[in-house]
Length: 436
Ligand code: HAX
Image (tube, rainbow, N blue to C red):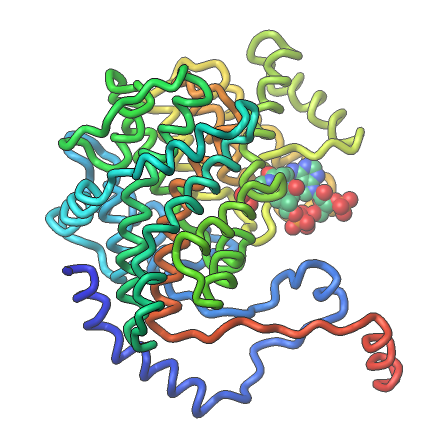
């Protein structure tokens, strides 16, 4: 298979490089860990290597070395669209090179061949109570699909460690192929009386999601899906979902089990759920003013909110120290496609007002918008108004990145992760002995 061939060609070089680092520089210290870092979520401690993506505080996300604007220009586009094909992005994540249009289309074709979801998966989801959170249904769908794992079956028979990644790659392709269909099934079951719309063979992966939730006649929404699924696909290895998926896969849990673990992390309010909070907040500002406020009125309102201890969702970031380029790309989309949408005009006005107000508060490390400051407002415009579904959309996209990381972790034969914990008493004794 062409993706396996591309990865295989790079493997000897990568395995040698890691071997050399471990052999020659095994004792080299990357960083020391402080007590406050231990007590604040191992924040900033560099604990793993990922060559797939990196978040630079001032440039934002780089995938395989390319910035978001560079990728918007260079990734192959969907037919008749300016937006990237998800197939080309997945090729880049896995193979470390910008694909040709033909290679991107080959991944899309692989997905078309593998997109059928077994009926038992639908039945398992249908049996859940109607008010189950869509992210729980999504995670359950991934777990139900685990029965199909090619790696788990071959591991039972016995395969050599050097080849594990081949089966992980098969699982990654089989799983990612089914994501638009799984998400659309959950959306239709929860919000559209369980309608079923089969995928179209001439649609790309992203556009098929739009089609399957009955947005066939809206090419602009197809483009938004292409943009959204590209922008949310990866954000290096240290965030909760990436780290959870990586950790679980290190126990040789297959791609389905590992990505479900990642999605359970993404479902948390401090991670993937932030986008729905942001939209709720924007709507409350819109309600408060009744029309687009002046900058001066908005400034007074925002200052009042911050003085009252309100956390403004969509602003700030643990790593970024600039406007998230994923926000900028979505703002460009809004300006071009939806220039008269009142909510998106409010997003832009907040962007021109809030950072200065946040800067006045010295404790905020980053006053700039993150990706969540706009993505809900865009979905809302196109009638996808069910807030609790937004994290599923995020998950569909993020599994592209998670599964690519996992395939490469097995290709480089990374061992099981097993850090060590210690007791408070031990920590106190260590500090006392050191004389601090
Ligand atoms: N509004 C008000 N106060 C803010 C703020 C904001 N948007 N961002 C940070 N602060 C405050 C913090 O609450 C903190 O106050 P305390 O010391 O009183 O606790 C102080 O500024 C310092 O925080 P920080 O160092 O700037 O930020 P952290 O690295 O601790 O946290 C967060 C980063 C993204 C969690 C934070 O900025 C935040 O809560 N923002 C709003 C929620 C949000 O947009 N989350 C989505 C993040 C993107 C993401 O990962 N999506 O998946």
